[in-house]
Image (cartoon, rainbow, N blue to C red; front, side, top):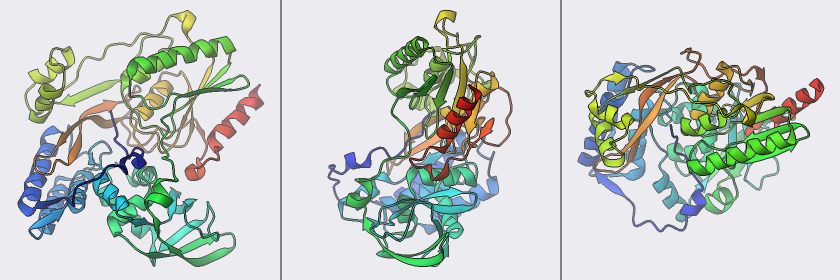
Length: 459
């Protein structure tokens, strides 16, 4: 389970891209047809969150929008994003147009200067990259250039794959509002921004900012990738980072973490899965094995849909001698089956952590991080603290990725369905046991601070 993101775009700035990329109308139409076919053939339930009528209608609408002898990579990507996004599945998507965006940066492109966060139907300033001191983080953004924020987000939604608006807004926060605003509305020199705060409502004119020097070079991504262990008196705090990368290194880190926690005799352990992009269950299960008190699984049910595309990718990129991949290759195209889920064994009793566990989540706990938090909750091994996740803990995921033949634009499609340990398939995020709002997604850590205060009152 992976969710590609814009990772350290500044590292791409040194890449000198050769000229603008364009495709012929026929190339785009052929790839659009291929995208439609592979979505229909590979996804386990394409119409779980949309209708066949809406899917077909959008396909024909997009076909009719392709005009002229050449179509830009930016425009082409947007078309493919929309067809995958109508599926309303967070793990079935065409990613943000990174290459055109990097070219835009290299050519001195500009952006809207405010990063936005969305809470309770309102938009707030999270970061202000403009030199205008009249705007402060936490101010409400009512409108931009005369358009209310709900109108603006409604035009961005068709490019974002997610099961519901709550998750779409979280993804806008995750990838950054200025980037999406540029993709959908294009370059603008200035912005009339209607701002609301305690002093009242007023209109501020903001100039665009240099996308490279004044935005990408100064900001940091919201996602948390750095693994960390620290202590607050008798409370151990663990951020395992994403459940991906070098697995032996991850396991070595987790081994050292629980040796240290045992030596410190910590009575409470906080596991932070906020702003976490997820990854693979083999990583998360290894962490869970250090406090599990019985054999366990990462989910109650896991189904895969076999397809021609999945078999082709398996033969090309995977070890076809493994039991898992042999089973994929043995199934009929279109067959949905359940691979055997082995019980994962807990660590020996003397190694296990036996104190109280809290798991922090927020709307940006994505993919395997949500599944893992639900797993810990469903087995009764910890309390969930924070806010409802944007991701569902029972979800269509376990992705395959492939490039479209003419344009080489990469498509990600869910090939499987995952059901949380409890067996519930309710269409909602993971609901915390203790609800605490992560306001503005900024450096003020309301969730951790409030939890530490609560733990202190229990001592």
